[in-house]
Each structure stands twice: as structure tokens, then as C-alpha cells.
Length: 238
Length: 296
Image (cartoon, rainbow over all chains, first blue to last red; front, side):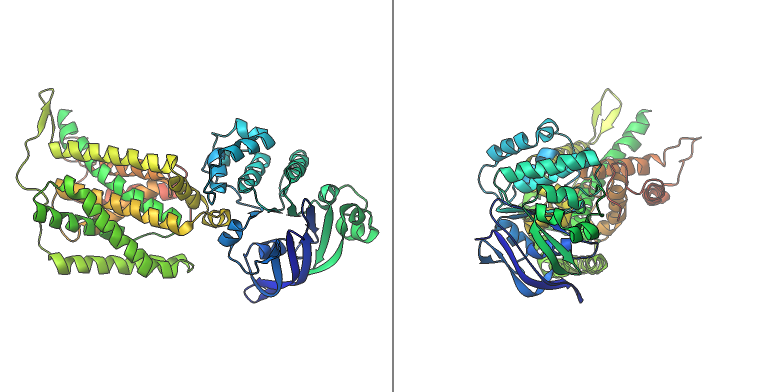
């Protein structure tokens, strides 16, 4: 059974419809990437999972359970963690306090989890007492991801984790995404840097105008001449 | 010099402590609930009158009944939040601000209706000042106000930096949206904000009543200097609000010291204007305040 499944999802903000029937799924252990041009509804599709917009049609299910239009604070408790593209950390809190907040809904002792994550993100262990707002862009992304991982989610949603980062950090973030995934957490990710993202992805979806356009394994999409032409900047390195 | 300490600096610190306690509530409500709470001065007023009644009833010292009075005031504030502010949680800020303005008038009217409008005193009799080094004279009530303020501030510091709910308050003050996405129980944080703000407002009001007297306009008179203190310190920065309160209290008092010649530098009648001069200068020069708060 898929961890997460979107079935012909229709919705948007207010009267503006953005998604016109998007379907996708994430299977256990997978990294799935959503790519597509600006305004295609990539981030919106992700927000649809998290209850951040009203769906007028279709269905979202988590481990087979219907979570369509469930409010975000409930979705979190069901084991979905979402890292928004911007303002995804609490800048005036320390790194460790950020992670503690990530564990807010946990009733049990989260210390062991904290130590585990410091091993996945060594720079954070070093800076745990530092105010998160003073970190570099790449390290903030790490805080945001580690904070989301505190709940040991069933699935992690990442909205453009490399947006605005230098190429050096981009590579670092992608390798962290792989590391996090290797600990067993499936990941659904929206990415602007499509080529690099597809390289680490098991599968990818191309959205255009709020609808599925292509889908396939990461490698297939990379090799597809039409996809390459339209979304990967021709043959040039992204 | 000693006259400066006795009659200007120490009263300034006392007034500043009172502003500081009130401003913490304002800055927390502003940053966590995202609105300027005009009824905060009236929370103070309500706390003062509840304390007064308890003192009359029990014959105990105001400081002893203060915790009970603070609890009753907090209950009233939580009720007000539930009945009057919660329905506006998703509405534009301006609607809640205006609601709080209405609340301010309502609370004051209720207090005037129940307790009347004549002046009252919190404590009776005149206290002899304590004399240090033969000339430094501090009244015991001033010692009490300043030390109680220090204790309360340490408690607030402990809450915000050591407890889960306190950290969640700071998190929500950073970003209410992210707090929700993170699964933080935002309604619980909101309640805690009212509890802290309401309790500190009661303390501030009672200290002011002990230092001066009780009248039904005291809350309103405190409101604007408390806002000035919150803005000076930076919105969302409780310790900025403390610094802002102390600065405004001290500057208000020492502005009438005869710095040049023998006349007061500024007629004491203009004291209230000093807080605004500082606030406006701050907004022009550095809108985020001394401690880099939020700019809305």
C-alpha cells in the first residue's frame, strides 16, 4: 500500500482553482519529486496534502486512511511533517529549541531522537545552543528538516529545500535528503533544480497547469527528450 | 546628587518597573496574538479593584492577596478572550484591535459601576523612608515594588527559556503559521499568553496603587507609556519591554530634574509627553526597537 496517495485532487485558494485533478503516490522508502514550470501547482499539490487549502474534489489518503481536508494540526498528529519553502524555522529560538518544538506533539521522551538527528546533521550538534536565525541558509534548511524529523514522521514533505541556496549547499541538501530517506522515511519533494532532484529520486511527476503531464522513474524522466526540452533546460547543466 | 537619587532616579525606577511589568503583556499579546491590545490598561484596573476588595474583605496586605487577585483577573481575561477575541482569530488584525478598544471601555464601565468613581487608597498611613548612608532615603514600598518586580521578571525568564510552553510562546511569536504547521497547540499558547499578561498586569496595577492611589482612569493613563515601552524594546521581546519600561520610567522622572540652573528642565506636567517623544523617535530611527523586534 502506498504511504501517501492523491487521487484526482481538485482545489485552490478561494475561488481560484489551481489543481485540476492531480494524482500521485508515494510508496514506502521512496523519494518522489514534483517538477514543472512556475505556477503549475507543485507547491499547491503539496499543501493539499497538508490541509492548507480546500479541496473541492478528489481524495488524499495516508496509509489508506482518508485525510482529505484534514486541518494541518491534525495532519501532523497523523505523522505527516511539512517543511515550507520559506520561514521554516523559528529564528529567535536556538537550534535545539527548534528541534524541541518539532517534537511538541510527542508525549514521550524525545532526547534519544534528538541525539539520533544530531548524528544525521553533525553541524547542528555543534551549533545547538546558537540562535537559529544566525545560521547560514544551508544550515537553516538542516534545522527545518531536523525539526520536522523529530516526530519520526510517516512521510516528509519538502517544499523546494534548495531554493535560494548556493550550488555548494544545494548538493549538501540533496545528500541530506538521501541520508534522511535512508533512515526509512519516504519523502515527497517539490524542486526547482529538477535535474539534481531527479537524480536522487525514485520517481518523479511533472505537473503543468495543475494537471499531471508526465510521470516515471527519476532516470526515465531525465532521459525523456520532451521532459528535458521543456523542464530541464535542454541539455545544459541545471 | 543625593537629591537626584532620592527624588528622581529611584521614583523613576519604580515607575519604570510598573511600566515594564505591564509592557511584557502588551508585547506578548502583540507578537503572539498579533494585535495591539488596548484593553491591557483595563486588565490592570480590574486587577487593582479586585485586589482592593480582597484587602478590604480580609484585612491582609495587598501583596499577600495579590496571587489570588491575579488568578481572578486571569479568569476574567480568559473569559474575555473566549467570548470576544476568539471569534476574531482568523479576521484581519484591525477588527480585533477595535474589539479590544471596545473591551477597554466595557471593562472600565463595569469597574466604575461596581466600585464607583471616587479615589481610593490601597494602603493606609504614611511610611517612614528607610535611610541608608545617612542620606539615601528609600521608602519601604519602593524597595518592595522593585524587588517584587525583579522576582516576577526572573519567573518570566524561567518560563520563557526553560519550559515547553514558554518556548512554544516564543516560537509562536516568531511565526504563528509555522507554529501551527509544527503541531504546536496554538490555543494553549494563547491561553498561557493571557495568563502571563493578566497576572503581570495585576501586579503592575497593584504596585502603582500602592505607590500612588486608585482611580478608574489609572489603567488608561498607563496604557500609552506601556505601549511606548513595548515599542522601544522591540515588539515580541519581553526583556526589551522591561528595558523599555525602565528607560521610559526613568527618563520621565529625570526630565524634570533641574539639569540646567535651578528650574526643572521640563515642567513635570509634560512628563507624559516624554514617553511619546521617545516612542516616536524610536519609530523613526529604528522601528524594530532596541532588541530587534517585529515590524508590522
